[in-house]
Length: 347
Image 1 (cartoon, one colour):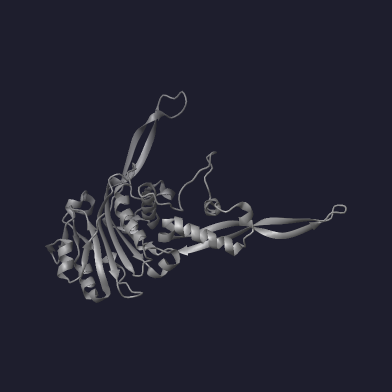
Image 2: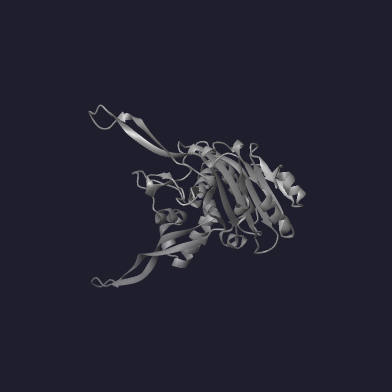
């Protein structure tokens, strides 16, 4: 049986997209999110978590709490209805016979046992619970009838997620491209002209995500070592297998997991210690072969804190080139030379 994690970890994840929209903004015609002042491409943590959730549910047969479920009439569950799924194993009479706190404890146990996304990312879950209101006495003629009434009470469960990500940011400026094209269908009944479609995409973006796994919050959601292995699988292979029209072509390039042995300690901000080296102007970037990843800062920091580090786990794409102090180097060699124990992941 897998153990609840006891060590803190930091994550750095790089992936790139080509001729795609990594994260559209629904409030801006679904255009790619771009920081207007810097030209940096932004990808929300919600987008990455959705990628991981969908992969674990569709490919690894893991149940997740946050997913779309419809009834026979096509009505989509709200959060309260979804939460009630985890009390359905109780007969109605037995459920109503339990106190509000007892029902919350049962829901908590079932949700954490069944839903890996809540164990990973936490959640705020509204509950609508039925509890006995009390006995009502009526006196029709000579008989005395006691009726037990029930009422619905609302409450909620709050889980702080052990795994949290910052907003992902590209390592370079990006440039939005706007397309117009004709659709396949007419613009309406008895019309002769076809509809027009418009879309926005980025020719290239190399995106840098930072995450942290908090061992303290893990105690409350019961996050295990096996869950974390599935998380890493979801980050890497979920990104690769997100094959939709706007996302096809996403490729994971680098995943680093720094595991600490010191309680309540992490270096922090590791993503800012990775930079891009290229001789190509940002507006001409189109492929990972045009850049190198500069590891100088992150290796220096890890080396200075190596006594607090248990090991570093990593996964790389073979096409990525790395640089340390101006010279090309393999990442495993860079870690080895700094005296940091390193393990390559099998993803």
